[in-house]
Image (tube, rainbow, N blue to C red; front, side, top):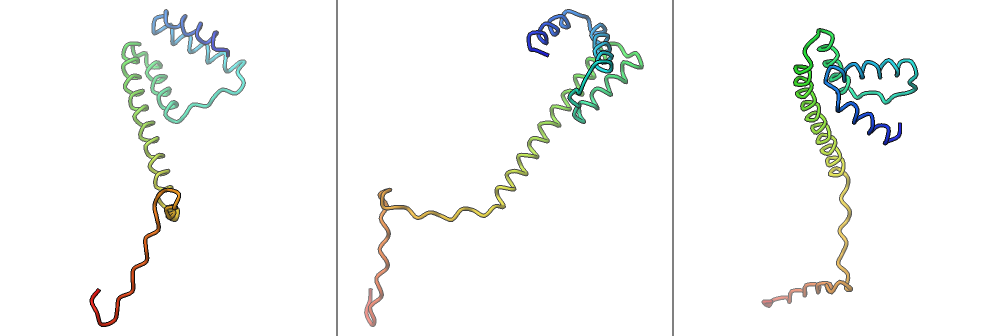
Length: 128
């Protein structure tokens, strides 16, 4: 679907009351079952969120209560996504930390650092 059509549908949806939005969703799901090809599969968190919403609709919970509940579930799912991202970042950091560090490179004379002079050998029987 092109972006212009998507935005037009969003504008039309914004003007509808909540309960009519669910009717539109039902119709879209009907069209998807009849004509759809391969739709993007929902993530596990999206499946849980959609299941909660569908269950609340099935027992005829008012739209206001569904909206509030879905807001809480959405907040929880965003938190879980942030935790998962932090976990992935930590694993990547650990992977990089276990790799052998690169050998140190000696400073070059071109950088203005001269090689230190080797220590002079101690003189036998005398003080240095």
